[in-house]
Image (cartoon, rainbow, N blue to C red):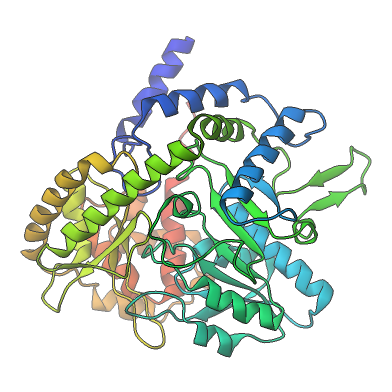
Length: 479
């Protein structure tokens, strides 16, 4: 093959992918809608594509880039002269490191038994992953079923000597609402417990808005760390995120250093050793070019579009917006007992060229959370809000005429008898065939699959979901 053949094949492979530009993919991607930003980011990324951020003494440009971006985040998000930070590969790694640092501090200063992570049920799943990897016990914090905000009184009742960290969101991913950061951080400070603000999706939006209802960043007493992604509303290529820590001692807790082998001494501030510098350079370039005024304009454009979208959705019969979206995230739920089923609505919107992300119902003490559709608004979506609302109204009418998706009761009853930990890969494959997703092939209409996932015991659903990905990632036959 020639290089041109290879590139042509790569381009052809993307034919089945969701579009990364144009504003119709309302999850996973963050499109500014500006080709000039994309071009600058691509050029900067290419300039650093062979640079290894493992060793900033060998590549001092990496240290300059990291220090500049961390400094920008410190200034934007309420830090002071003591605040330090780390560039990571994305929000998940930033969250992992925040939990790791808190666990290490807890072990050194207090820890007997198993550390606990107090986690609002709306906090990002990355924190559950961190607890799994680092051996913490997750303690679920119920949220207000109407506002979907974490409840400080519930946090107060759960704080104890085994609590290593409490997490709050600014905003939460599922519903786009802002947790009461100051109230919860005051509780954690009084108890001597660190408090992490997950601002991965909102940290590069909220500081540029005029109507933020309450403080959320490192300026809030009791907040000890904060994460913000630059590959979201910093409009950098994936993946680059910033983890800020209120003091240098806490940052040291997630660093790893060893001279205990015959090779070069190793010091890693992140989970990775070798770190690609391309996305860091792209984030730096976009930040240097846009500056505060440029980001403010993009943030306000996306925020205004979000407000218009939320107002328009509320006017569609059978739908409602959940909570009060403070940034650029909107969650849509069925309104009333005879309202529009949002799982069917997701399929109807897919047929009309939009990706809206289905979120299953969630049971919790004090009131369950409904099934919702998640929409992420970016700069590229702003001009398409009228078209989106028109398609939503049309899709809602079509979805209302469909039967509600119901899980097969026999399959659900059988699943209740299964020990998911004992299932082999072959047995999972067979169960997926019964569920209609065998061979990694997803059906055109996903509403019945989502309904089944919601009805299954959580551990069984998780095992089957992992099985779907296992089917997707199987090597092609050798040619």
